[in-house]
Image 1 (tube, rainbow, N blue to C red):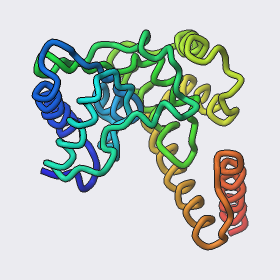
Image 2: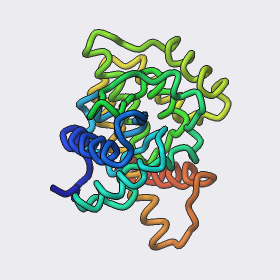
Image 3: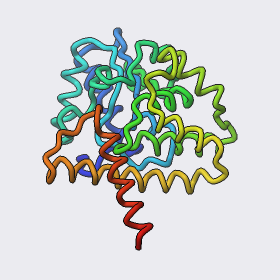
Image 4: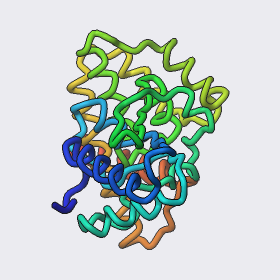
Length: 242
């Protein structure tokens, strides 16, 4: 079994189970480890609107035997290098307070405790990341939609509390992400908004790749939104003049 198209909910659980076995083999049963799934992996674990993710971002609390176990599972199943990683801790959506707002998911082999992120905190983290060319914003709409479907809708007050608890306020969250959140909370058709946002993200990704490949313009977090907005505005203008 190999991951050619990405991790799904089904194989995510399988690989975590295998990881627990490897870790227990190397570290014994007396010192448990904890992994908090964030990002796409947390969405896979908790919701059904995301089909896959291409790596597993996590906060890992374990002995050095965990790295050996991750590599062993990766080698055995031909998984991508860094299939489970803590690189997320170097991003702007990381907060040292994440662990206190995480929630229990599963325990494997009586030694590996898996936790995920509570809904409003996952929305807060997606707002902080807010990349228009990834799935951050459609993930927000998807979470709100599924919470509503489950009869546990999220309110602005809950999300505001989560943002303040993790990041101290809204100062570093983009205006675009804030407006998308407001539109989602006011929407009477989250399914339609989700589809629209996915389409815009796909177009934004194409824009970024085209600029990098053909225009040789350096794209980074400081200019990516301006580049995307310029391209989307041009596309709308072209459409309106037809």
